[in-house]
Amino acid sequence: MKLGIVGLPNVGKSTLFNALTKAGAESANYPFCTIDPNIGIVSVPDERLKVLGELYKSEKVVPAVIEFVDIAGLVKGASKGEGLGNQFLSNIREVDAILHVVRCFEDPNIIHVDGSVDPLRDIETINLELIFSDMEMVERRIARASKGARNDKTLAKEVEFLERVKAHLEDGNMAKSLVVEDEEEINWLNNYQLLTQKPVIYAANVMEDDLTEDGASNANVKKVREFAVNEKSEVFVICAQIEQEIAELDDEEKKEFLEDLGLQEAGLEKLIRASYRLLGLISYLTAGPQESKAWTIKVGTKAPQAAGKIHSDFERGFIRAEIVNYQNLIECGSFNAAKEKGLVRSEGKEYVVQDGDVVLFRFNV
Ligand code: GDP
Image (cartoon, rainbow, N blue to C red; front, side, top):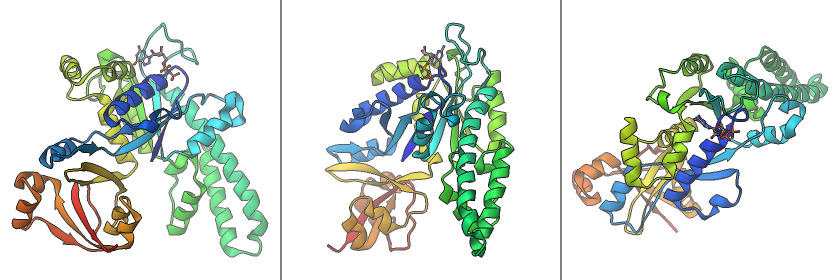
């Protein structure tokens, strides 16, 4: 699962990316972290794993991860191929969601490409490039589909739909705000993989002084929030510079630093969790003396497919899953104690795995 970090130059993308990968590299220790300087594998903070690791005296604790890609260079004119634009747009095509960094901090020493700090104008600049790129894609599809549409009713219907998408984009709207009418239209739209169909989190990059939980003191953040509500996107207030500093600290120093700022946890950790949620992901857990581990699944995944994340044999030979809710397990103190209290359930093929399920799969080999 991949998140692409976009935004105009000098808004704090690399600062945020560096903070994310630094924090992620330290807790997860993934050897493939450094293969590509623009890709960072980041672990998803999960208190539950630490507790399970202690309960089972696990040798290893393995968190869930998500991938962040630093997509620099998206500038005005990118959709026309300016500034290597098309390459960046194709990088965005490959991600599952977008983290759009917006400059809300004032700093006379750091030049803004458009001369002043104005988050709504910046958002519009980037979004327009994405919209232009989608329009081109939709026009190409219309041209192709129109050829066969005379003899094919479904294709003719699709061309009509494509025309609607085009008009929607031409009005400056993102594809995700298009009102779709039925299953067929949903499938078509998903199939086009438009850039403006992807979920977005706006990361409002503020000054240290504005770093309260909701950033309410910053007028720019307020504007971004109002804008995002209409678009049904999330907003996250962050100070990239502070996060980078925090990422350099060890645990003890970090705690003190956060206390001084009056914060409970680093913004980064919350941001990673929010991203995970945005991608529609949850974790189920396995625990044992060898390792306690969080496994990533999409909301709605059934038990055999969840088992398949561990090994394809688990999915093929799936018999049932023994499941206890994390909270119940901790309260009882052990799997057996939970079993005695009737809190361990035996679930079959149709069971939809929940976040925080601690699972033991039974399967045929
Ligand atoms: P990018 O071009 O979007 O990747 O931007 P950078 O991360 O390189 O940041 C551009 C400049 O802004 C750098 O000099 C950063 O140190 C600075 N910067 C980034 N975040 C903040 C922030 O939250 N506050 C202030 N004052 N400066 C920041």
